[in-house]
Length: 305
Ligand code: GYE
Image 1 (cartoon, rainbow, N blue to C red):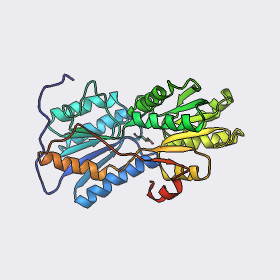
Image 2: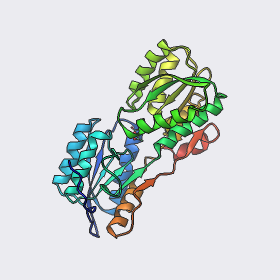
Image 3: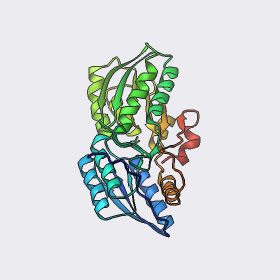
Image 4: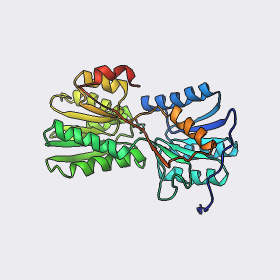
């Protein structure tokens, strides 16, 4: 689609709105928490939320957004599964005059830019998350480890940036080597299966960096089945900060997890209201993320999702 040099669509101030939330998948606690947060806040505001679930298919998610455009909703909240396949529909929403907010994962910003083609990107700094995971691993292994990396879904912005952030950080530490990397699609089951194979092929591994907690938890199961002792003879670090990951930290199996806050509801809808009111919206609104390890996992458990 050719990019048209036009202003972003306006949004009227109204007592209530009908908005779409286009979810990518619902197969892990992070996605469930994100969805619940959007639903709870819509309910609290008395707005109508049109919810779609793409079940892990970027193609379905694109058609979900198109059907929201056809329904002429007031605004669209898109959490794009992958960057490139979801970029065209962002431009289509603009063309149709519907303000769109990209939340959590991003689209391809070389084509669609926040503040120009869509109202704003709201989400975590995935690159910083990768760096924070690397920083912890460097410290806790004394700068020496052979790492297996479990990558997130290929082509998704968190997988891209969590990989880059981690690798850029460890570039200064020659004692830290990534000896194998494979996608586990952000799921527990695939994390387990991939780790089963990789630990066979690379018994010399001393660490695991998983792009999310679910894959780390799957990896722990696989490592234990292979006779390894997670937390003792192999160090694991991951990202998300879900409750079951904090429990794994308390159990001494997972070393640390960088929080990726899934609670978007309040911030997303407040940003939309501000936009309707004509306030200036920053193109990038970055969430604050905590960090969990043995020092605070117990105390933080009840606040995790
Ligand atoms: O880390 C993962 C989920 O997009 C940041 O997606 C999110 C990621 C999250 O499936 O668990």
